[in-house]
Length: 64
Image 1 (cartoon, helix red, strand yellow):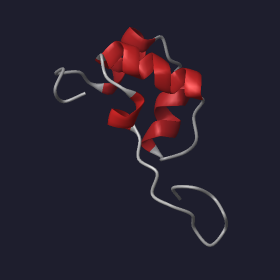
Image 2 (cartoon, helix red, strand yellow; image 1 turned 90 degrees about the horizontal axis):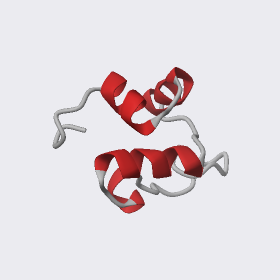
Image 3 (tube, one colour; image 1 turned 90 degrees about the vertical axis):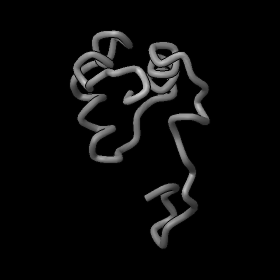
Image 4 (cartoon, helix red, strand yellow; image 1 turned 60 degrees about the vertical axis):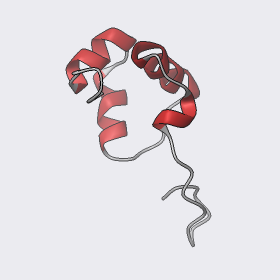
């Protein structure tokens, strides 16, 4: 978003996302692949540019 001089509201509008999706992203919660693809399209990037798989936690959740 920084590279595109875009804030969360602008990204939400450009990608056609709900405020709920933006809130989940801010809290590092799960969002759908569709939402991630919309973000990639809005930012002209690849999925690997916006996500990171950090590994499994003790609870078995990925990236938490």
